[in-house]
Length: 120
Ligand code: 5GP
Image (cartoon, rainbow, N blue to C red; front, side, top):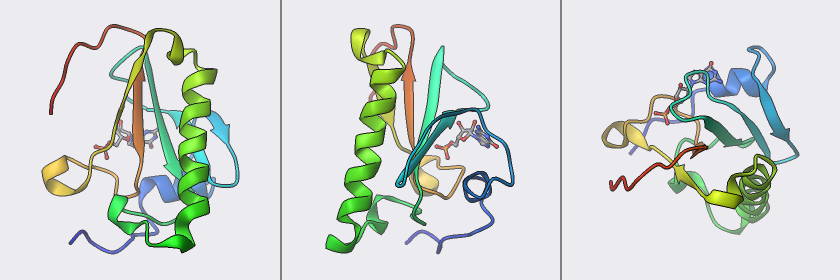
């Protein structure tokens, strides 16, 4: 499986306020901020506050509130950024085969232009 959670990963440091970010939303469960290297006109990362490396780290009912809060934040960010009008893409990379660079679970929100079809 993927490595255990590394509390020194860059998103953990952003969550602790040790590294600045361009924040677009924060609540009890999630933090959203602009990607430092935007690939589309809108490129925002949404991360849960819990220590999850991948989707498989959401275990059982203990994490239900965290999961719900996280996805509620994703939807709110998409709405607040105006992405619901013409559409956008959510993407999450996990592990080496998934091309994940930062080992704290996150979703990318891409939007602001016609993205075309990208599968996978
Ligand atoms: P992934 O792990 O999904 O492959 O990509 C991680 C993303 O985090 C990349 O798009 C990268 O540009 C972004 N990123 C890496 N370090 C930082 C940082 O310090 N600040 C911000 N805002 N984004 C970062």
